[in-house]
Image 1 (cartoon, rainbow, N blue to C red):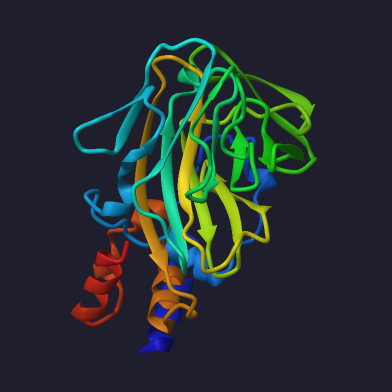
Image 2: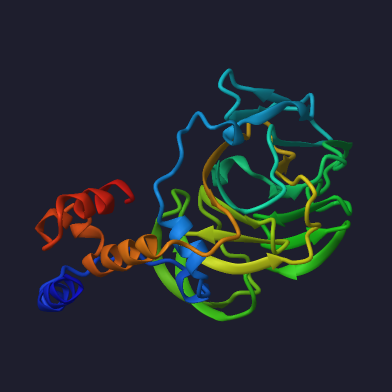
Length: 290
């Protein structure tokens, strides 16, 4: 049967439609991912009602207003204040992926996303970086692309590389292209994925479908870590969604095979697995795991 599938895939390769994703400045900066992370990124997201998708009603600045579902916070229009919030539930082990939705027009300065321990302060006078502003948190400042930990600027993320990316209009739509150095801040879109490997003690980010590599290493192992954000912008609305996770065990062979087949089929034919010479059980697995 494996030979049949291989022959079918090879015979269809020539006429497989090639997707043409929109230009992204982050794609050339992407780094290879482990099989564990690749499978997790390509797995179906858990239910939106998962407890790890909620902001904490306790661990937040009083200037952050929480929605009824706890998946959205909005900062009040308060001047000379830096305000933070972290998730309701943290993790101690495993690989975990969260999605943060934050409109670029609602960020202003000192817009930071990252990971914190329970001891990270969540409110301070003036305009400061909170997530990453002490030894209990690690943050990525979205406007400047700078990494912060222990109150220190650790440099730019992603790393240095000359790029050609579109100039961005007020609607964040590509208009024209120019050559720049990655030392110039790259505009971060609304959707950002946090990739926390609590077993390895690392934190990275995915932007435009590209994993930009490890931003922080040596995070404390066996300690509860929480997604966190901090902002100084009045009216900023930030959403949190837990997508998926995995144990430290390597991915199952079936999951790796399913991922390989779906990648070969391409985005436009993900739902055509019923045409493969496979038993219905395997066809259903490919569909359900997409």
